[in-house]
Image 1 (cartoon, rainbow, N blue to C red):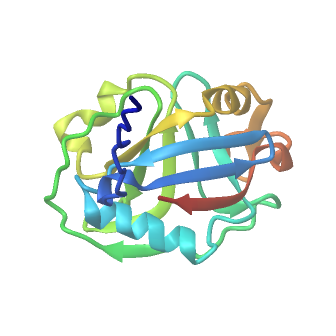
Image 2: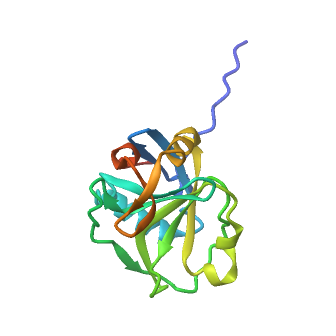
Length: 182
């Protein structure tokens, strides 16, 4: 007697949003917390869909702390930063743990999200302190590609045009594109 067992059907929900950050060093896969923080995640997804991140670099590399990107191209030309108004008091209570991804709010106007984001390279509890919660929205976590992240984190860095911890060879830390999958 053959017994057929039906496989469960997986239905993508708001919590199943994933992105692939295609870099010059490889691909970083990120699971976004869309179901928990729709405003910040939707903003990030809209910015991705616009192609804004194509050709930008991780412009701040601090091994053991963060990789930051979202504003400079490989020639250190500053792109017009994308910003969007959000609830300044909303806190999703996600922590800046190792391998999480966070958006940065505008430094002078905490109800504005910027296009800048960072990947935590450590458990950065100092970024979770009450006075900082208005500045960083943790929106996802890396599910694969931490080897790529660690490779970028070990790139040669220096100082350039008043910026510290910038890549010596920016083309080696370029985000070629970010792709959305469900």
